[in-house]
Length: 293
Image (cartoon, one colour):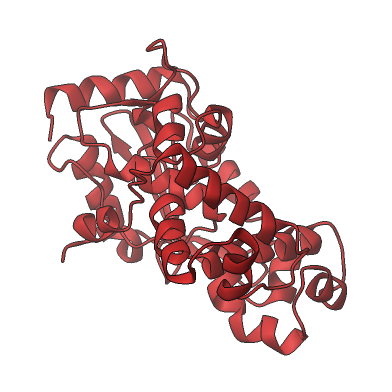
């Protein structure tokens, strides 16, 4: 299965009734109320008077992740937030509901992409390479770690693009311009901007909450040449009043283009916002209209 089909296979297609969505919301509320403590699937199902098997399938269909993964994402987000707020690793560990610091370190690479101590120091230890090249929309900065693409930016001033990258990773061990290491990623993004491919399919090294992942999966599923409103995306996710949250998830996307948040518009068709400015968003949509999928 190629990367595009794999990404689309992961997209949550709710197709749930209002009653089913309400049940999943109650399950989410129950998980959120535990303050980091994990409930078993059986305990959640019993509290909701539902079959564990049915709840597991329904939860994953609506949320895009299992109840366990949802709990883990919430706990990981709490852990990261406490580290960033200056809590010690021990305080953050127990404050987020982990039973021991060893559990955190065992899972640190999957959670944070680095050790907790490094993450607390703003990503200290990250090794990032980048390049800046000409593109159909101006200057393009592409940056990646050994794991995958971590940052993209468009603009007209190389100095400002580099400042953006350094601001995003203030404590990286190194941020080095390396055309050879980043050449493949740059080539894929350029092919996308030139309309040669409908999606820029690259491995990613980005952090996201469970909700951000769900929004980003919906964005990846939008065919080239088409758009969706923030409200439509929220409806697909089973949160009909969540258009603002969808907009925030788009705004915090560090790899726009690969995760195509430019395909999300306001309900009235207005472009809404875009991290690089509406001129870039309009140009991207115009180009895709000429090369639909």
